[in-house]
Amino acid sequence: MIATELAILAAEPAGSINTEGIVTFFASNIAPILLAVLGVIFIGRASRGEISKVLTSSAIAIVGLAFIAGAATLFFVGESIIELIFN
Image: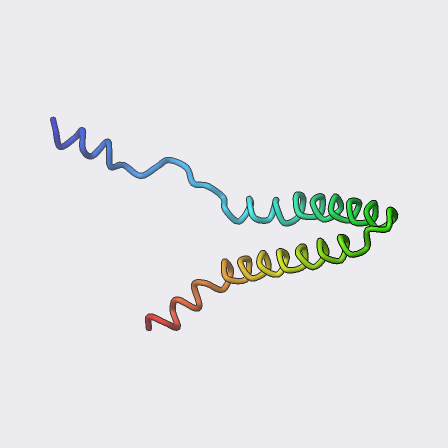
């Protein structure tokens, strides 16, 4: 009886999470909205004459996008890198 209870506890989950679908959803829906909001904020600041703050914020946003692009590249190329290192 204990062996069957352990087998039930160690059973594989019935479903799986579609991580590629989640990443695609964020890349196609959420990221453009966030970039549009940043653009509106930058235009609003620039119209008030706060050019230095706009340039600083733009530089920070560009660095953030570079980190996101690097993480996405690592996400898709990571398996190849691991195979190169450990084979």
